[in-house]
Length: 254
Picture (cartoon, rainbow, N blue to C red):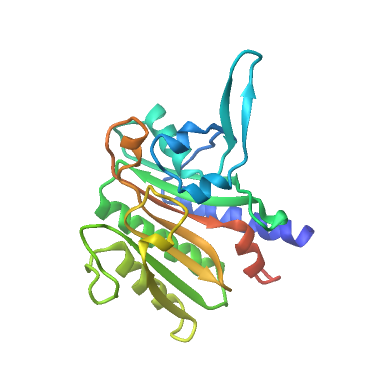
């Protein structure tokens, strides 16, 4: 347990140092969130909604259906609308999400993630590539890495590397991570959008990074999310690390 906590602290400190150095602002979101935050914008798939911890927040006369936060991107976008709408925001967080899954020991999932909202796709994509590359490089992971790309753009049906636009985050991410991990420890694949059964809010390309057959990182663009939550349309993108899984991959010397 002590070693696990130390590794958690290593990841947390590394993430916070890198994000602070890149002028991101740390935020906190409420653990208990209204259910309609996740349903009004159609942000979670039915399978994800089925796995939320939901209950009635009873006040004696009527009650509101609430959930333990199953995702941070949605409340982070709501935080942006409440505090910085119309501005450029570079935000990050380190906090848990709660999902009812078969593994009873892994239902509280600690994440460290970023949100870039109101920032042009070109600038945001550049920042994401830089941050993901820097963080994965500093973690010194020795396991094989796979990048999974999900095409969420209905107007651009692409299922291979060569057909990807050169400026796309998907192609650039594959190239950047391929330069970190040797050819024997890195590969990628494209999957159909229907296989990405977690979040509906993604647009363009979504990506996941897999290590030891477990997702350690995921992200993408969600340019319709702010509008879906009742705000003005705003460019938005980001990613999140699964700290629970990263801890298992860190060497004891780190």
